[in-house]
Length: 355
Ligand SMILES: *Cc1c(COP(=O)(O)O)cnc(C)c1O
Picture 1 (cartoon, helix red, strand yellow):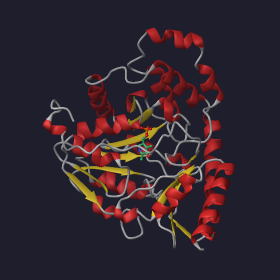
Picture 2 (spheres, protein in one colour; picture 1 turned 135 degrees about the vertical axis):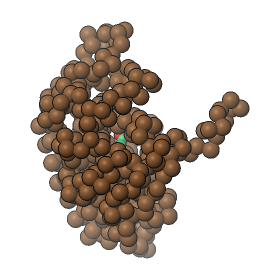
Picture 3 (spheres, helix red, strand yellow; picture 1 turned 180 degrees about the vertical axis):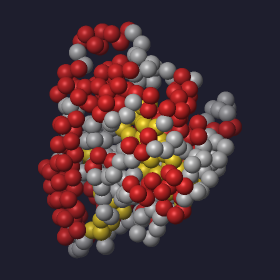
């Protein structure tokens, strides 16, 4: 720390992203990326001519992108916000909507929520999950704070139904209810359409998981027009050109090729069911997942040991050291071939540990 850093941030504990190794080639199952490349149109969109236009700023209004998102999700452009990854949107939302009343979110969820809460000195209710890792919605009803829930939740992969989410929204009319649907395309129930019914709902999604564009950084959100205006105000007060030209172009193309991404999601779901069945046979307990990852612990071998042994064997998964989940690993679902490698390596590890 330099002697210049504001005392406000001296004790801030920053978010720690999953490893992005640049040296060795791993079967990379640790940050929930898609194993599939972006669609053809996206790849072809980045021509020399488009790169040549980088001397010009990007469209700060992202008009084409917003129009396409509105069309695909049957809303209007005024209900759409886009940003540099959905992390950007979460950041803006904590900044804009949580400072007076505070925020409520699950103890075991996306690790960025408590970081944003701390960054903005937000009074947080960090609510434990139930014994079975589910979310008890009664703890979020009329809670007097901004509610932030990932649905499906991470790292559990478990979901709440639309009806449950709607109860949370309708019982908190004086606070924003932010539903982070980063993984919704892998089997969750979206509440995007409820944006027309509730003026306190903010639904956040991303191109990073189901749309194979984690490296392009593009997130989007849907809400009532007034919430969108608030987010725009924050964006224009921090970084108006926060989405670069190439990413905007690629985002539009991706939205024109939705069938490709739908078919990829289907494959991921099939591979998920295959993987769960296989590793359950090997003594793993797996939480019910509607996401592109599973959260699994072995009946005999510790989570960290499995993580380290897999890494040793060239397979990277995500291990969290928090006490309540230290026996688990979060494993991204990738191609069938990659899942077969995982299964083979897990079989080796089990053998090595039963000697
Ligand atoms: C991956 C993830 C995000 C962040 O996505 P980006 O759009 O890449 O910033 C947000 N929320 C959850 C729950 C995630 O897992």
